[in-house]
Image 1: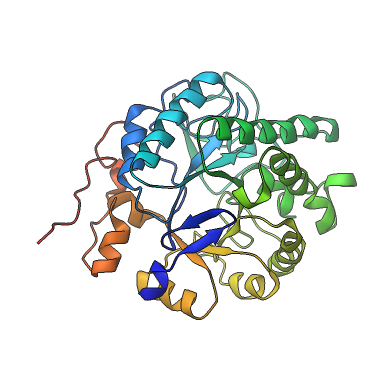
Image 2 (image 1 turned 180 degrees about the vertical axis):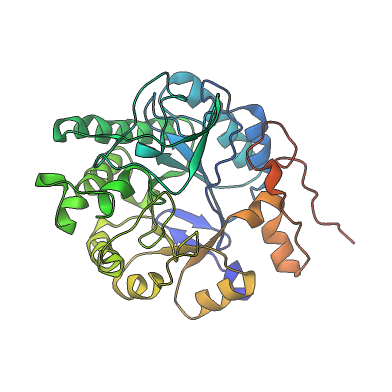
Amino acid sequence: MDGLFQPLALGSLVLPNRICMAPLTRCRADRDHVPTPLMAEHYAQRATAGLIIAEATMVQEGHSAFQTEPGIYNASQIEGWQRVTDAVHAKGGRIFLQIWHGGRACHPLINHGIEPVSASALAITNDITHTPQGKANYVLPRALRDDELPAIVAAFGQAAANARAAGFDGVEIHGANGYLIDQFLRDGCNRRTGLYGGAVDHRARLLLEVLDAVCAEWDSQRVGLRLSPISSFNSMGDSDPIGLACWLAKRLSACNLAYVHLIRGDVLGEVQDDALTPFRRLYKGTLIANLRYTPAEAAAAIKAGQIDAVAFGTAYVANPDLAERIRANAPLNAPNPATFYKPGPAGYTDYPLMAIT
């Protein structure tokens, strides 16, 4: 496991280990999308991660996908997140904020009737969402006009500035899992023509404009990006996912980012393909990988140069001291999925720490 406990430099930020906490939507913000003191406790418990990547956080009002996910677009939210970052830093931790737009994964019943938007008028069909009125099918989104996209780009830039004001060490742009940026990247969802559709360099235009806006607010070495080129979650797909991954790897190598955070496979297990190998071959920056790694597999992948760090998801749900447990080769707590998205401390701040003998 030695490779997991080697320091890793992200520009001027040095991670003491290569065990990252993946962004995990847990729905513990309040109804105004303001982070709560309970969230500060939760993240501070996990401060021994090499890097915490906080959960998907709204860059614009009116585009909620989970009812009580946090935002970063107003003063109250900045203040709430400041309590979180203060708590993490007091424990010696490092924390990035994942900034996000849900696109067609949003629902009018969650957003005061506002219709969702996307690259094209195509709905999510392989899942349902949860609303104040109960479970509901996703609705047909409205295709964004080209002249609406600058405001979304600007919202990501402002979110990055707000995250800096809230005390974060950096930001991660959410370009994965079938949310808005990913909806533009992949041709299974993007059926546009013109500047933002068709060839891959056009489909990637929104992502690259967001990167420019965010890096204008914050040094690029404090900016990460999450991608999932082969995942089918949220009814996503692409006619050439490996070609897309390779194009992105080459193009992003010139961006001098803190890292790319790659979901190596399909979170639903329906697409059997390998995005990691070709991406690693072509990408010249720091690569964090995610999706069902065991600690032993992650350590071996780091030693072999396949990845630079690993992001653990559900393992960090149930194990606030995951890094210490891995170092001690101690057993892990099992997560309880029934409490993943329920309000309150159960399944959020009450998982036990490793016994010290």
